[in-house]
Image (cartoon, rainbow, N blue to C red; front, top):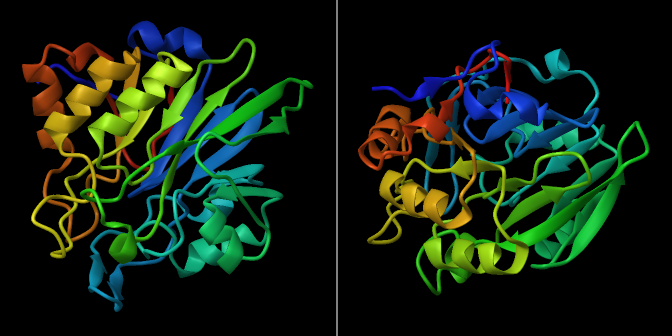
Length: 268
């Protein structure tokens, strides 16, 4: 395959974006943007199983401990109700972060969390004084009507003068919602797509994007860089990073794809 495996060397058209990142594992991506340290869905537990409505089994350890990332300025938490997006160690981390953004429902359950409804936004000040706007965007964790079982989830769009516009999908399975995001907010420069076609056994369709659906999202939002996360490391994921890369290659979009090596920093 010809898709790019991300490494410490900047590659492709993304080199000018000035973003540095490392995948911890699962949905947990650490981004350095405009001097801000940003983390998505923190998961730092060792492998094990979590009992609940369904049993979720983690297969791989985090590539880096939380301490290796240094202080975190901002956590983008798609939702709090599933251990594969917020585990025990991740919950402990939240108490050390100044700004944690998530759904209003998560804010009602977790102290120190700011809840944003779809299309609400807030700003975070970068070290150089620039204001980073974080807009909550709609997401759906399964088929239409799934919320009573899966709960509400959110995605995020980050934007500011002089930095790339970044879309973080969260555990979204709806291509149509990304079409609405594109219509309202325009194209993005970098798309962080939670994929893996997760199948916890509650619905006849996956509850996160399939690789084919991720291709559709890339065509809709037209990012120059696509970063797949949450494709491996848990037993309920059915399409790994290789399947994701194959789909982008078949679609002729493999030049946009940057597949992270867990634990290895890369520039985009």
